[in-house]
Length: 223
Ligand SMILES: C[S@@+](CC[C@H](N)C(=O)[O-])C[C@H]1O[C@@H](n2cnc3c(N)ncnc32)[C@H](O)[C@@H]1O
Image (cartoon, rainbow, N blue to C red; front, side, top):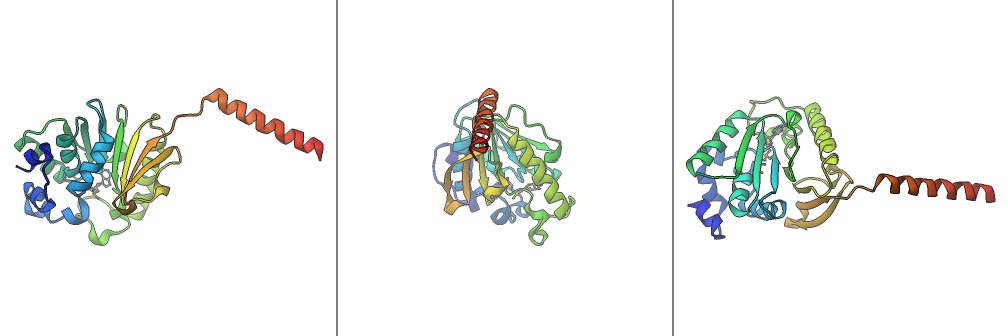
């Protein structure tokens, strides 16, 4: 029923959506899963066309990807390190016959982002530095891992092709490489939309550096 309403663009409350999950998983929703409203908004930006391929880094029980797949024309891939959450998400996909949505049980450290056109990040590594409200103890959590994951993802984001779309939720702009341009802010600045900038052409960069060098030399000679 909730998926039918979403397809028809009818309002769906989170408490109704979360009933698709076992009680133990829906109890985690308020803190750990994206709300339907935010998921719809972000997915619309990330997946404007049928060839959009969106990855949710740390997809949890799959709420963002599921909402995205029924409200946009794009394809959604959730990567999640907790096997139990991937099983729960796959059960929902099977039960409700959802298409264009896939869940992969893996750590982001081992994922290849080739072919991905957009990414969604709901501060996925945060529980490593605030373990009080963590999901469970089934995976190792530590500030050292936080640093490793953050650095890895930062580098991966920086290597994505120009035009890559990015939506972040509850994250600082310092967590996003400068190669991305901020386009929009929603939900009091908590939800941000970015696009990877065009690369400066190699020979243009050389020309700029050459010009800078020439100017420096010119000024030195004048002094
Ligand atoms: C805040 S929840 C977000 C869930 C989902 N993206 C959503 O918006 O509903 C973050 C998720 O990231 C997962 N996660 C954290 N570190 C990860 C890693 N290194 N690789 C894969 N998943 C990770 C956690 O297990 C958790 O399910």
